[in-house]
Length: 260
Image (cartoon, rainbow, N blue to C red; front, top):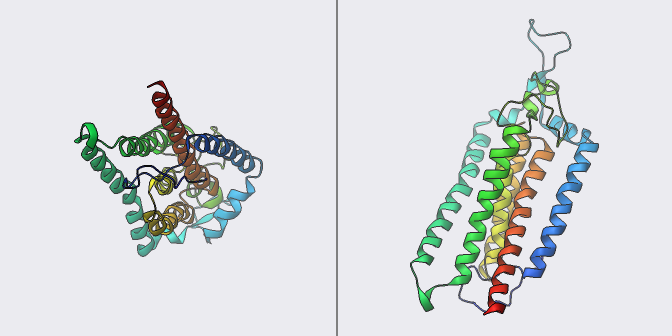
């Protein structure tokens, strides 16, 4: 992504942003990349299995277990410090979203010359991408109907359900399934906010935001809650949605200006 630093609203904390044409190109590239990665994980499911196996600790089964049953767990999911870290990370997108809603309400309190159109538009893009991406597409649709069991639910990692590859809707998970990761999608959304934060603040917050946005999906994989493909595709899905809304918003805004 290429960021436009030449904003006319230098005092606006949300003025540094992608150009409309660049945002449209970014969306097309990211959209194609998402499908290419899905194809890669579907063709080579051993990638998911190998990464999950890195965090799985086999154990001796109880006497009542089936002869071919695999027993064990994902130790990181039981570690108190890791669980606390995951809980903190889990809350961050909600806190940030609440702050953005507050900023948008404050923005709408201004009228006429004091109303910052660009800031309001960028805030709506940020909140809209959260609603469409992590909430609607990921949690209310894919995770509800994909049927893909989580690693710890599959018989390869101590569970009872069959493994299914990324993108398959043939799994027997009933709800809140593994494909794709909702927390990874929220983490990807956090990463997108970097591109609507202006300089010099962007340089200060870019590294910590990026670190958190990558640690969130990494923990889900380490916990056996998601396969690598669920985390990668979940994270990237929010970036795709964000780029789409950003391109649409800026194109619509520029068209209105040209008509007036």
